[in-house]
Image (cartoon, rainbow, N blue to C red):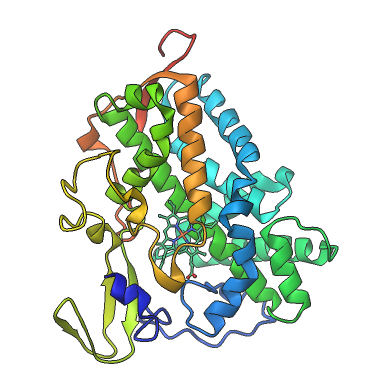
Length: 359
Ligand code: HEM
C-alpha cells in the first residue's frame, strides 16, 4: 500500500474521482473551487505545497499550543452549563474550525462566520443532493470575504497561512481563485477529519474500561493514545489514485487507467505489522508508524496540527473531568454513511467535573 503512495508517477492524484474537470475561468467569481494539492501531481503539486509548507512545520505548529489550549479550555468549560452533552455537537464539531482559522490568520471576530461557511462548503463535498444554488451563494460570500482579506494584506505581516498565500498571489504564483480554493481546501481537509479524530478518541476514552483513570494517572501516555486512536479509527479510511501505467500491487495486476482505492484503515490493522491489531495498546513499538495521515508526497500537511489539537483537548479533559461515561452502548454510536470519512456523529455522555457533583 505504501508502495502505491510513494510511486507518485505510476499512481497519479489527478482526476482520481473519474471526472474530467471543465476548464475554469480564473476571473469568474462563481467558478467552482477545486483542491490545489490533494488532486494535483508534480510539478504543480510540489510548487503549490512549497507555498504553505513553511506554516505547517512541527516547530511552527508547536508555537500555536498556548492559543489552542485557551480555545480548547473555553470550549470544555462551557460543557459544564449544558443540560445534556453530546461531545460531537458540543466540542469535536466546533473546535477544528476555530483552530484552523487561528492558523490561517482569519480575524477571530470573524471565526463564527467562517465556521458557518466552512460547514456549508464541507457538507457539499461528495454530496450529490447539495443545494447548488445555496452552495453558489455561500461560495460567493466566502470568496468575497477572503478577497477582502487578501486585498488588505500589508505585504509584510506574518499573519499565518493566509500571508503565505497572499504573498504567492502578489508574486504571480497563484490566481485569486486559486488562493480562495487553497483556503477552502485547508478548511475542508482539516475540518471533518479532525472532528472525527477527536470524536473517535473521546469515544474510546469513554468506552474503554479503565482508560480514563490510566491516562489521568499518567498524562505522559496521552501522545501514545493519540497515535493508537489514529491507527485504530483512521478518520480517513482511504483515498484514490489513478494508475498511469500497467503495474502490480501485492501480486495483483493493476492495468493503466484503473482507479485504486488505497485503504489506510486496512493497513493500520494489518496483523503482520500490528500484533493484536484490534487492541488498543499504549506500549507498542513504533506507535506513530501508522498511515492514518498517508505517506509520500501527499502525506497530510496538517498532521502536526491534528496531533497537537487532539493532545491538547485530551489534556484539558483529563485536567477538568472526574469521569466520562457514554449514555448509550459503544456499539450503538451512530456513524455517517461515507466510505472515506469515519467517526461517530453523536457522542452522548455523562460528565463528572472535578470539584462538582456528577451531572
Ligand atoms: C486527524 C486529522 C487528519 C487526518 C486523519 C488527515 C488525513 C489525511 C490523509 C490520509 C491525507 C493524504 C491524502 C492522499 O494520500 O492523497 C491528507 C492530506 C491532506 N491533509 Fe490531512 N488529515 C487530518 C488533518 C488535517 C488538517 C488539520 C489539515 C489542515 C489544516 C489537513 C490538510 C490536508 C491537506 C491540504 C492534504 C493534501 C496534501 C497534499 O495533497 O499534498 N489535514 N490528510
